[in-house]
Image (cartoon, rainbow, N blue to C red; front, side, top):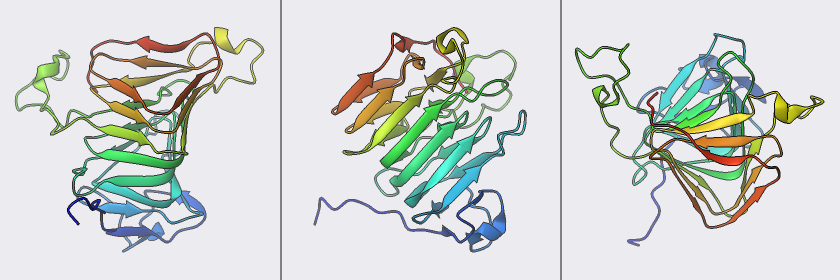
Length: 239
């Protein structure tokens, strides 16, 4: 019918171990690492890990969509950009964890199970969700930080927490004796990112969100703020 939801078609399917590196070609069928224009599918009980978590060792992946009943983990300093048009290539994944990593791009990603959104310590440890400015304009100066020197994305990137799913803004310093005084528990929304909650969002006691100008959060479900921090206005910036 006319209201049928578009479904992206897998171009690359995970055939690797229960947990393995996204960037290992042999973990995918066909045996190439998914890239721009591709749809990466991770089946149930499998986890594709982007990055190693080591300082200054982040990796970047750009795909049209991600799909599946499995999981994706984006570790410290690494970035997963989902760029497909939501009208034709919407993404849907059961579990997506940003452990010091970034989810970006102008696509739409629906979380059907859980998302853990957490800082992972410095350096390069701040997790973020963003709508990426795709590239700088020719001749622009990368050092001056002028936002309008970036090309504009075709749409704002969206993260949807589905009914029954949970996004947890996690306190990664929970084992410290005074976790709320250590700093570094914050995560960021940047560059127009849109969050639509139809499930549950939990902000743990010593965690918080810094939401830059132009980002938005729409709640159609439940928000549980467990501590005194919560949600703060950030600043206008670009990635």
